[in-house]
Image (tube, rainbow, N blue to C red; front, side, top):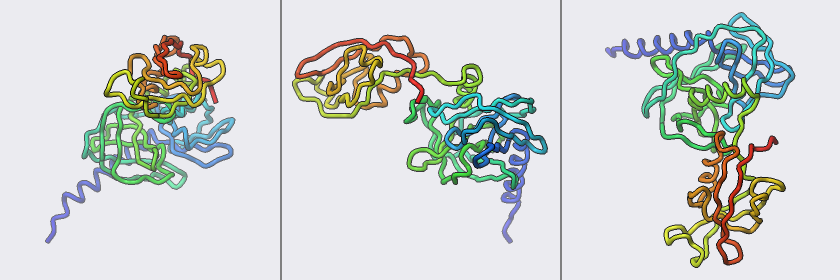
Length: 297
C-alpha cells in the first residue's frame, strides 16, 4: 500500500502558505478595465504588474472584506512595477524577502473576485542582475520552470518557507520570470516618493555592425554599434554624435551590444560624463556626452 503521508503533508503545507498570504494579496479593480492581482507592499501602497494595469483615474482595492479607493502613484516599465497609493491604510503582513536557489519550489499566488489562485513551480534558473528591454536593472534573473497564464502576471511568488521571492511577470518569449522583492522594493519606494523612476538617456538608436579591420580598437573587437538615429537635442546630439557613426566604446567599455551601453545608464548616471570613442568616415573621433534623464514617452 502506498504511503501518502508525504504528499498529504506537502498538500497541507502548500494550502497553509496560500491561506497565510491572503492578508497581503489584493484584487485591483480599475474603473474601466480588467481586475488584476495586487500585493499590499506597504500599509498605504499596493504593487501591481505595470504591463497589466489599465489607466484609470482611480482604482478599488479589495483585501478580504475590505475595499479601499486608490490612485496611481507611478509606474515603471523598466521593472514592470506600478504602485497605487491607498486612501486608507491596510495592514500588510508581508513576509521577509529571499532570493531563491535553482531547484527551489515556488508558489505563485493571485487573487480575484473568485478567490485565491495558486500555481506550483520550480526555480529553473537563478542568476545575476540583468537589464530589461525597457532599461530597468533587475537584481537577479529568476526564471520559473512552468508557463504562467496572463492572469498570473503580478502574482506574489513565495518559497516553501513562506518567504517572498518577488512578483511574477511574463517576459520576452513568454518566459515566466520573477521580479525580485528587492527590485520591487526599490522601484516602489521611488515611485511613492517621486512618481517615476529616473534613468539615464543617451538619445541614440544603436545596431551591431562589423568594424573595418583598420578601425578596430584591438584585434579582439570585431563588432561595434552603428548609430541609426540621434534624438534632436539629446545628450549624444549635443556631444556631436551623428547618424552613421560607429560607436566603438562608451565609458571605457567596448560597444559590442546595446545592453552594454544600457547598463551604464542607470538611475545614478544622470549628470555624469560618458566618454565616447567613435569611428567616422575612416577616422577615430573622441567625444564626451553628459547623461540626461530619460524623457517620458
